[in-house]
Image: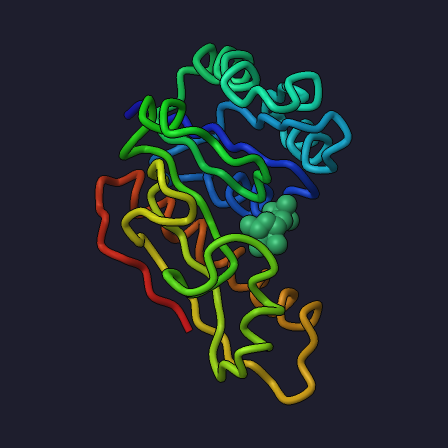
Length: 198
Ligand code: GRF
């Protein structure tokens, strides 16, 4: 059986990428084929290299204000890697509908909220501000609309008394590392039944 090829896009430390790469072993139907970043300083790049995963960087800064020009460069190493599935994992650039449409139905993202609540940034602070008793993370198919698209999995955590954005983010992140690999394994085997953890 040939494995499904998974490309992972990241902008930072890559803890989600590490969880995904380390989960793709044994009978898992997929293997990582590329880790791609918009930032040469992203800590995740070394972690990927340490795991023997090919890496590439396309710096977004020379293309400031011209998203299509950045994406015209970004797509080159991506197509070269011939991925079957693309996982956005702490990738902090907004992708245009044109770019996403080339991978519609096989591009996933993890977002640190219980979508459809709190699309966009600062999700933990917003959940605390709202006084929510529960918070969490969501894996969804990527569509042209930001942080939208069919939900493939969610993990719920309770908000604890005294939580600050940092403590809540840390609790959610540990569940991201459980949820994303579980969703990827199910998605790679052709099953889109949502994974619900809590
Ligand atoms: C995390 O806050 C996560 O919620 C979001 O991206 C951030 C960085 O994650 N998906 P990572 O450690 O780079 O995977």
